Length: 448
Image (cartoon, rainbow, N blue to C red):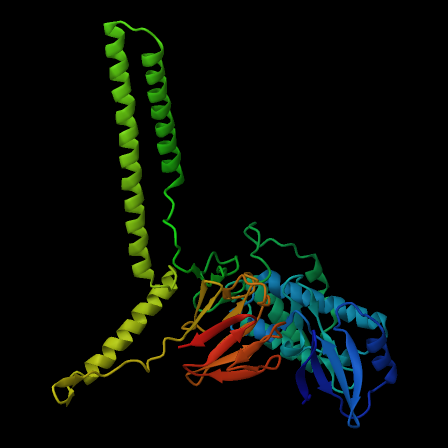
């Protein structure tokens, strides 16, 4: 079992492996530390207290186990990973490196969410056969691939059978590099990182991948000091009416006092004058009415939302919390306690809402943790909750549930993840409790 640890050094994140014994061949160690081999993570060697450590730089990368352990891999994603495996096997052979040093466990395979680049770890101290590692990777893929796609299931299962029988060779996945980005129905496949979370995904046709849109954290501005604007079309119509009536009024007054008119012409000018004034008055009344109506609707919406956004998921969460409170009150309704003339009310304060509440620069950030696992970041294609804030990493933090407790894991974030002021190490997992202060980059949250 490898002794691994994540380490942060200034602006770099590393996965460190403590070397055991001597490498099979010092040539291999020299090749991976002094060359940039396509498909392999960059590696440096450090000697600490008589021990040798290999440092693999994992900046802006996530291991596929963290990304897809609770999601479904569609055809394009799975084939892309297998095709990159084929490419890296070709590369290490060209550098005269042994296949046995390639670590193919899912926690050692990293993806750059922005460039879709897949990179592997080469460990020259590994003395085991490569077939076992291939089996571990294929077992993981069998669990997380889209089982509705029969062709994909057949491909992965056939590769697994070959590896299990010891007949796995690069040529068996050679054809994967020619697979295009379209599924069997002729429709373009979802984006590489639009994998879905079971069971909430929307199942499409049998031959198409499961697709689900990433959930966004709703950003809600603080109450504005100005009145909300009217509908744009209504504004334009009222403006045109006001301009026409004002122009007509000025024109009639100019004609009336500039020229000498007969009695019939004077009557016509008075009629036109009152008509334009009436239109101007009606325009003003309509403007005030629509403005008042718009303000009323805004107030009603704010009362309904109560600062929690307008998403159906969050409203469902509020209803769940309300039902929890009702259950608690029903259980204790038959056992009232009296302190003098005052009835003691049982409080539901201790009921967890499973939400993170935060505010920064007048903008509210609410993260719903009732549906786990939940990955938070600013790259919408990779995460379940997207926060468009510059201090947040593309894939920043992951929330999971373990024995009915909420766990938080830092995903190699650039600006860090903090619990009660203490920064988590890269990939460190901690348990959070109600009342904890959580900080993601520059954003501060309170967990309730």
